[in-house]
Every structure is written in C-alpha cells, then in structure tokens.
Length: 163
Image 1: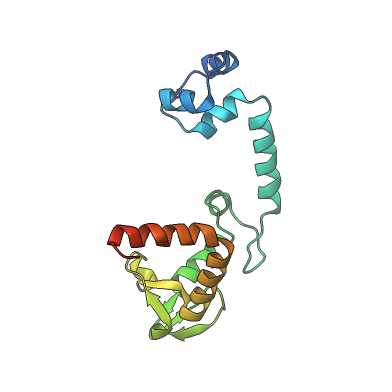
Image 2: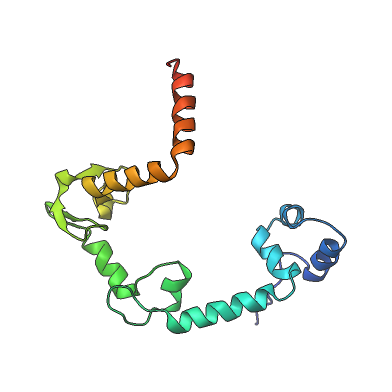
C-alpha cells in the first residue's frame, strides 16, 4: 500500500489569490502554515533558488571541529558540527568538577559558571560560557544595543515604582 502525500494547502489557489493582491501573511494565517511556506509557493523562482543554495551548502558543509563532512541531519538543524563531534561535545560539556567554556575553549571549575536551571541536565544546569566570557558578551551587547537596553531599564524601574 503506497502512502499518498497531500498538501496542506492548494498551491495554485495560493498563487492566484496572491496575484489578486492578498498578502502572504493573510494566506499563511488562513491556510495554517508558515509565511515561508506560502512565500516558497507564490514567489517565482524562490523554491528553486532555495533548493540550489541548500544543495551547494550541503556539498561544501564541513564540521567546524574535525573538518569532516556533515550529514544531512546535522546541517538541517543548523549545527556546525558533524554528528560524532556534536555527541562528543554534549558528553564532554561537564566532566566531574570541571566544565567546558564554549567561548574561551577552556576547562574551568564549575564555580566559574553561572547557574542556569533551563539547561538540560547533561549540561550540568550551567551556562555554556564562563562568567568572564559571559560578562564580556553582555557588555558588548549592551554597548551595541544601548537605546534598547536603556528603554527596557526605564520601563522596568517604572513598573517597580522606582525612578
């Protein structure tokens, strides 16, 4: 018994409605799909360009750690490592009393990391960056987003009843 694939929405109808002036956002909401799914269908040549780019990228995809070829699954999830290197990195993030900082690439005591209860248990419930690296990252982000950060702080203080 063969399984027949049915599309979630009619591509021809979506193209016709978009040509008549309906927005991608409205079509996506009505069909219950993402805007990207609609854009792939209604924009001439979009799907072909996307597939060509994906094919080229998959052909040249190399692991950042070992330089070996990456498999389709690791690339489709946005990873920069092949499966063996990714598995090794997850297993060796925390090793006894030491943890690996993803930024400075050093093994450091667990006390040098901020706690993070949202991290998976295999990561030891700590941030992926050590305190100094995380502090530097935050400092750079705040400098680059000064207005956004100040507006957030003003709103936060106003909500708390402060200055």
